[in-house]
Amino acid sequence: MSGDDTGDDPTDDSGIVLAEARSGLTYRRIREEWADRLEALERDVFVDTDPGHLCRADEFAALARLFPEGNFAGFDGDRIVALGIGIRRRFDFDDPVHRQSDVAADLGAAHAPDGPWYYGTTIGVLPTYRGRGIGDELYQLRKGVCRDLGLEGIVAGGMIPGYAGHRHTLSAPDYIEAVVRGELSDPTLTFQLNQGFEVVCPLPDYLHNPEVDNWAVLIRWRNPDR
Image (cartoon, rainbow, N blue to C red; front, side, top):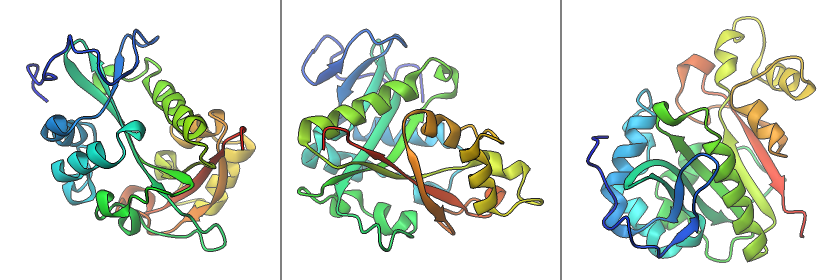
């Protein structure tokens, strides 16, 4: 993303959900006019991911219309440097195994306005802004959405990047169990467990990622107000 990729009016306070966060960012609900910028940001964040698996500008625009209260952009001044994207869904925990494409092929169409669960599709932070607690702030915003709307909680297909270093010696389910027990640490799953998430089940072929043999893990956070 170029240095002049800015919001339309950084002095406009409408849509601000968190100002002067610990990270130094200001968070706003996404807007349709930011759709191209959000698409470019996601591609800058996930440079090794097939663009076909990332959110398109028209999907960001649809989410801004359909579910603005659940989708956030993080600003450093007038520059968008982070995003937290999700939709409402009905979810069958008796049949939980699915692929990312089952949900993310068209986020606008997949959004269920009366869905009891917040399905987190993406948290992305530019590499130069990582390590500042932005992921934690985005998760707190998501949890706030669940509390405000009375949702059951958050579900997501979580990545397990640390499995790349263990896939020749451990199966993915065994790796996930070792992380849950605290015997191994995973850059993403360990962080999510520390956020109060629980593991529901491994997800085979969730997303094309040969480094981890396409594995992910279904995680869930239960809204304590429910």
